[in-house]
Image (cartoon, rainbow, N blue to C red; front, side, top):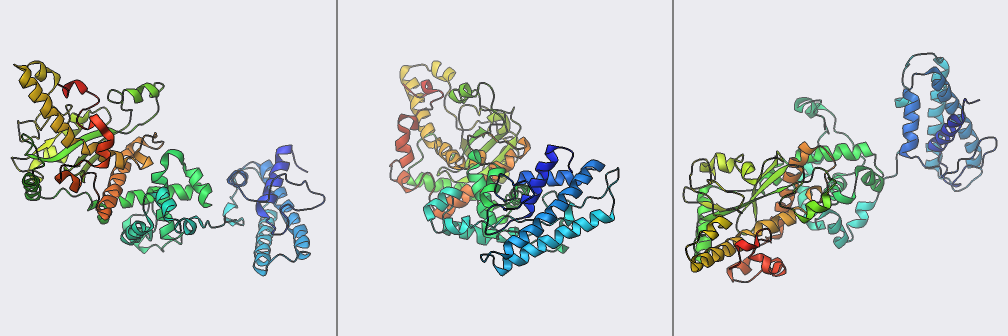
Length: 492
């Protein structure tokens, strides 16, 4: 006898959760209510069982005892049904017997410990566990290169090369909360994961690539893995991959002498216009969205004045668009200039630049180039300077300089666009802790730099030396030479 209808439903769920027969989809048993759903375990039913097991109320412990007794009856009747069928293999029959024995063990334990008031001892670890079937999604997609790259951003060949470099991380004993420490983790036995390293890395990249339309629960349902396992694995891999030497090495600034040699090569090629010969890097900033405000549609129309409520990130790249350095996770109330003053390039310029070097910025970066210089970077002339031009010819000359500076600097925006193809830092709102937005942007920048280097294709390539436009430059049209935020500064 059960106290209420909810307990009856709990019996049905427990029976359907603990019994799975191969031949019939539902159990044709007499004397027990038939469940109106297929006998397949779900997270909702498992949570219900855990809630009952952890309850300390005596009445609920009696309900649990009744559930286990009912499950035992169902198993006995199901055994008689299974014996009459010929479609059950020996392995399935042995698994059935193991579940039956485990349920009987729980009943004996409940009989030995009578129900009483108080919390009691949880029997959850002793209950038989039901593992979801392993997904073959990776094995299917690896045979479809285009679909594979659409899912994770890497082709199968590129994915194999990345896996070879970072595979040792996937074999480490997972300690997402840093509870045990490095010394104890080295002595712990390596955990046997449900999926192989290549499948776990593929799941990680898919989630980072498709973050806007995917949650941990959807990821878990797609791969038949628990939500907690998907979440902990993502957190663990993110923390270890952003510090992995193979990915860290892809963001290389080089020595000041190497920057000078790179600048001289561009000058000899004749691609640096007059007044821009000292440019050795490009810097620009962006900001992640922390939440959607009530005026989000208006914010998208006026991006410059409303960049969201998240963290600021600065990207430094060379004149080809190759990422060289990233400063991410800066407090969102800092504008681009304030964030730049917090970077290593500004505070320790001798490690990155020669005294004659300069950088390309937009009009927001007004001020000295670094802490050891009073000269500004290479910026476009602002509206006040254009109004103060002594002659019309001088004003046209300033506007022409702004167009040249814009065309040389615009490649950093194309690099930003490639990085933001990763949904984790794209235009979708990040749903996690805002303090982790910096790690997300660093990770996606490293993955982008890895792909660009492995493919040998950067936003700007050989066509630049031949005075030809790249495909993305052709698509930009007039905005290649004119900043859409301040077009009056670039037109005569």
